Image (tube, rainbow, N blue to C red; front, top):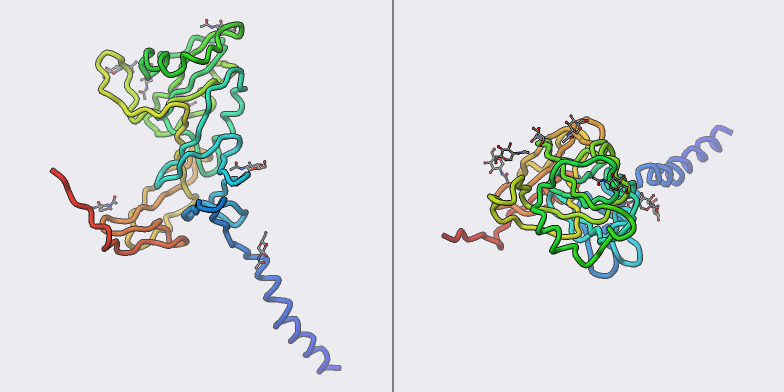
Length: 254
Ligand SMILES: *[C@@H]1O[C@H](CO)[C@@H](O)[C@H](O)[C@H]1NC(C)=O
Ligand SMILES: *[C@@H]1O[C@H](CO)[C@@H](O)[C@H](O)[C@H]1NC(C)=O
Ligand SMILES: *[C@@H]1O[C@H](CO)[C@@H](O)[C@H](O)[C@H]1NC(C)=O
Ligand SMILES: *[C@@H]1O[C@H](CO)[C@@H](O)[C@H](O)[C@H]1NC(C)=O
Ligand SMILES: *[C@@H]1O[C@H](CO)[C@@H](O)[C@H](O)[C@H]1NC(C)=O
Ligand SMILES: *[C@@H]1O[C@H](CO)[C@@H](O)[C@H](O)[C@H]1NC(C)=O
Ligand SMILES: *[C@@H]1O[C@H](CO)[C@@H](O)[C@H](O)[C@H]1NC(C)=O
């Protein structure tokens, strides 16, 4: 009798337990979408990924918006010009681990209140969006930018202006408040820049720097890692970390 119990216990320990625990900490992350796109930690396309994006028909999406690029600090998504797209769809870009940065200027339709002047010269807006006329029949177009110093847009501030539709967006390298004196800025039309982060305390590779800030989603600690000069990699201890980049010596030009 005793032996049988022991045998059952052994079976449990050897066969059942590993399977159960493997399922519990199933943290495998699928990093590819389609044939040639492989994403770095923390991005991926399954529930085990620290930042999960969607892969639909071999294309990467954040909600309804196609991803143009994923970088060290940012995700750029395309927001194609479209009349009468509900402003609520912009809320979807405020995630737990990413949010639109303050470097975006939104083109909004049908705002009840007059909103503060756009930080992008009006002529630039006109030249880029002239072909799409949302104003005929369906109301006025306003440009909104958040002049916060905190780095991220605030969704409540956007809704405070009581605008109905999101037509498109312009992402500017440096938003300037004066069209007359503005130095040339690098513009990305029909795009929104999202800043991303991981939650908690820094878990960076020993050869990386950690940037700490408060998560715009909930005010809790957030961070990003970046490999020190001379090193390459994602910089995260849960990722591939950093390794010496001896093959890619950057030459300083004068
Ligand atoms: C992890 O989960 C995926 C899908 O959720 C499944 O296909 C895979 O077999 C799981 N791996 C393990 C070790 O349980
Ligand atoms: C991915 O798609 C699902 C189902 O449509 C949605 O619930 C989820 O929010 C999407 N996630 C992202 C990052 O787009
Ligand atoms: C813009 O259009 C909306 C709805 O058509 C109207 O209520 C609002 O007063 C207009 N705003 C301005 C600044 O003209
Ligand atoms: C934002 O703009 C308002 C009005 O133009 C100004 O009073 C305020 O100081 C600005 N805030 C920042 C952080 O620049
Ligand atoms: C945005 O919202 C925050 C908090 O609600 C507020 O402190 C800030 O003044 C607002 N900024 C603008 C430009 O309206
Ligand atoms: C615009 O920028 C100038 C300095 O470059 C500053 O003095 C002024 O207050 C700014 N205006 C607004 C509305 O932020
Ligand atoms: C990391 O921090 C060190 C010391 O503060 C600094 O010298 C170095 O330039 C930083 N590296 C990066 C990639 O920011």
